[in-house]
Image (cartoon, rainbow, N blue to C red; front, side, top):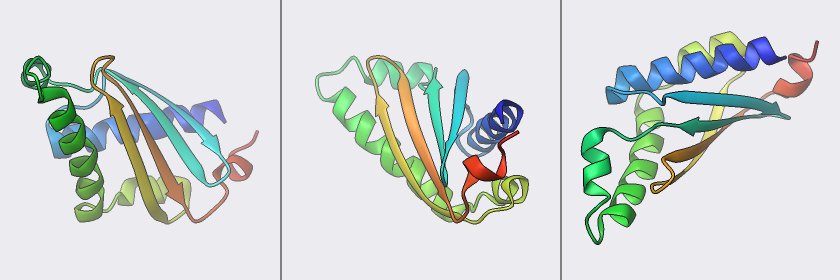
Length: 119
């Protein structure tokens, strides 16, 4: 299952780089039932790190990032991920800790990924 999770991480990085200009430095994916849980480090650009130094910057950046990432997947359906997994993308849950530059994305699909990719 690890090689499929690693390949899914690569697809997430490429998708974000294509649509946001920068992908996370490191992604670790775990399949759990119909979820692909991605732990991501190194998400913020230098400009975002600068914004986070302002008084309200962290909260503003966190709100903007979580909503913008979800909107990006709504507008740009992740077809490559669906084709790779053989499952339909259903929903996405996103959060980020600005101070740690650590984010989590939980991709929800219509099939049990854990069962499909067990080796």
